[in-house]
Amino acid sequence: MRRLLPGLARQLLLMAAITLAIFFLVRVVPGDVVDVLAAEGALDDEAVERLRGDLGLDRPWPEQFQRWVVRAVAGDLGLSLRFETPVSGMIAHALPHTLGLAAASLAIGIALGVGLALLAMLRPRSPAAWLVEAVNVWSIAVPTFCVGVAAILVFSVWLGWLPSLRQTLMPALIIGVDIAGQICKPLYEDLKEAMAAPHVRTARAKGLGAARILLRHVLPGSLAVVVALTGMILAGLIGGTITMEVLFGLPGIGTLALDAIKGRDHPLVQAVVLVLALGVVLANGLTGLVQRLIDPRPRHLA
Image 1: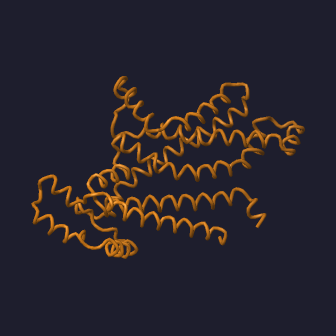
Image 2: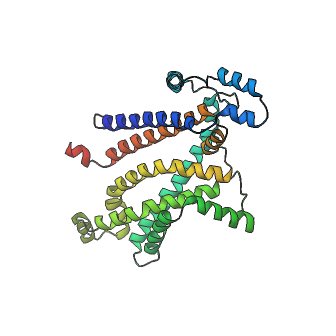
Image 3: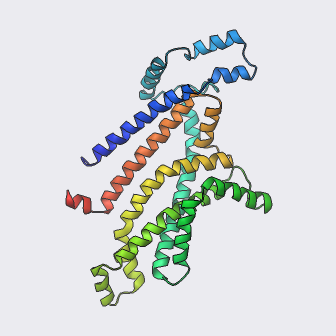
């Protein structure tokens, strides 16, 4: 546990720095929610000044930041300036949609990535080894947003198989294939290296089959690679799900953040960024803990 505390402290400091940065950055952008409402013709000049004072937007930025931090620590993320609704309730409504898409995408990606790597090991002369390379290059070279646009054009517009909005199958598959490409190649290389180990040669000499050796004696030692990759993937998965939510019109954190940014809804933007930063911190901490439980080498060397 003591080994985890320094990393956790760094992550918390990073989250605090991100929160501070986003607080001031959203205010650097010209205009606020009052200007948006005025542009819609709902307010005159006198009402603009009065509303800006009521919302505290005319106060110095350090004072606004102090008030927001005190309330956030107490669990009060404030009210949406545009919708006059508690921000925590809006996030609680949107978060399950984002978590569901992220979980489905991660499950597809891990299953496909590990499956391709194992198949390539068991059938080295089959197209599986080529697929490992192809999926890996695909995940590196092709942005998921472009794939999403192409998928809508082909499967929704041309073929009419799936609706273009409010469905999670296509975005989960798109992100899942991208995740699989990040997993299959490193895992495949690690498995190839592990198959040359002395204990594997001993298992072969005893007459054990290739599948049994791979699954029982080699794969467990390579799971630490999958866990380490999953930790890095989780951080990028947040951005991927946000992009897909906006593209496919899903009611998740991504759509909520976009609406907040367009409406200059500062409390909602800050709360969304805080939740996303906290999610990255929790994902990194959990990944590090699982990796230490799976791989005994760090504990042995300590």
